[in-house]
Length: 445
Picture 1 (cartoon, one colour):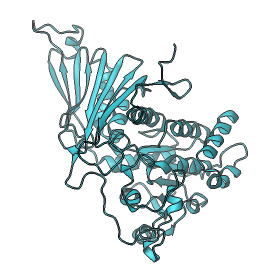
Picture 2 (tube, rainbow, N blue to C red):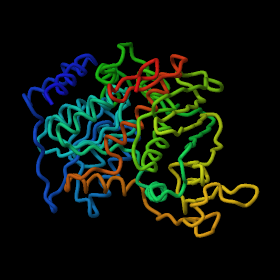
Picture 3 (tube, rainbow, N blue to C red):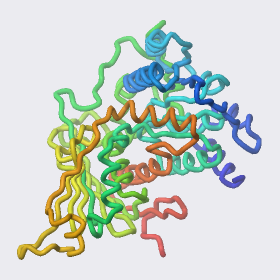
Picture 4 (spheres, one colour):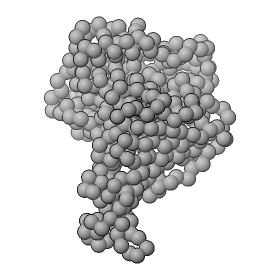
C-alpha cells in the first residue's frame, strides 16, 4: 500500500501536478480522507467540474435523477470559462468557481462529475478520491496508460466509487451478450468487430468559437488559460485548441479515446471478464480534414492472450457503420446490427455456424440452440443515461461496484491508449500486464 502511494505521488509530481495536489495529499499522511456515510434517505451532494457541452448535459441528467429516486442535487459547478460557470450556476441555483479545487476542498460535496478535456481527467479524479469523494468520470477515463494504473490503484486504496461515464454500457444488450457467451453459445470466441463513423459538413469537433473569449477577456469572456493547460505543454492562447480540443494530441486521443471507448468498454462487458490487450496495432490518417493533428480516419487491431482479437474502424468523413458483433467458432453474436453502439437495439441475434453439408460446425451447440440455426433474444429498452447515473448513485449508497467500474474501464483505456501510441509511432506494441507497461517486444511467459 505504501509502495503504491509513493508511486502515485511520483506520478503526480512528474505530471507537473505537485502544486495542485498538495492540499489533497497533505490531508492524508497514510490514508485517504474518509467520505460521508450516505444513508438511504440522505441527499447526495454533487459538484460539476467542467461545464462545457458534455458537462452541462451530464449535470442536468443528475439533476433529473435527483427529482426522482436518485435524491441528489448539484451543489457547485466549476469551469475555467466564466460564461460556463455563470450558465451552470443559474441552471442549478448553486455556487460556481473558476478553480476546481474549490469544489474538491468542500466537505459537503459527496461526489464530483469530471467532464473536463481528457488531459485533466486523472488528475482531478485522483484528488477527488483523496478528499473522500466518489467520482463520475467522463470517458475516456484518462489520457495515458500510466494514469489508468494510478486510478485503479487509488480506487482500491481509497475504496471510493468510480463510474466511467460511457452510458452505453448500461444497455441491456451487453448484459444479454455476456449471459449468452457465458453459457457457451459461441463455442471458442475468435474475434469482435465494431465501428463508430460520423460525417458532417464542418468536420467533427469543430465546435463554435466564442468571439472575445480568452485570458484577456472581460467578465463572462474570461478564460483561465493557464489552468486549462494544466499538465499539458505551455503555449499562448489558442481559441481553436480551447474550443476544439479533441483535434489535438496534447488534450485528446481523437477517434480512439472519444469514440472507440464506447465500443471497447461494452465489448469488455460482453466478454464476461475484462481483459488487457496483448498486442496492439493501428493505422489511418488525415484524409479529408486537414485542420487537426489527430487522424480523421482510424482503425485498430487488438489481440488478447486468451486467443481472440478485436477489430475496429472509424472515419469522421463517412457515416456508414458496420455491425457490432462477436464471432465464435460455433456461432456469431450480433449485438448492434445497425452498428451504432450508442443506439437502441431491440434484440441481439445468435446465428449458428453450419457447413455446406448442413452439419453444425460445433455439434454440441445444436442442442443448446434447440435445433434453431438463428435465435433472436429480446433486449430491454432503457434510458441508458438515466440508468447509468442511477447505478452510480445507488452504488454510492451501497458501496457496490458500478456498471463501468475502474477495472473494466482501465482495460478499455489501455487498448485505445496503446492504439494512439501505435499510430503515432508507426509500430506494433505489446503490453506487459504484470508491470502495467507498454513494451516494444512481446513479454515472456
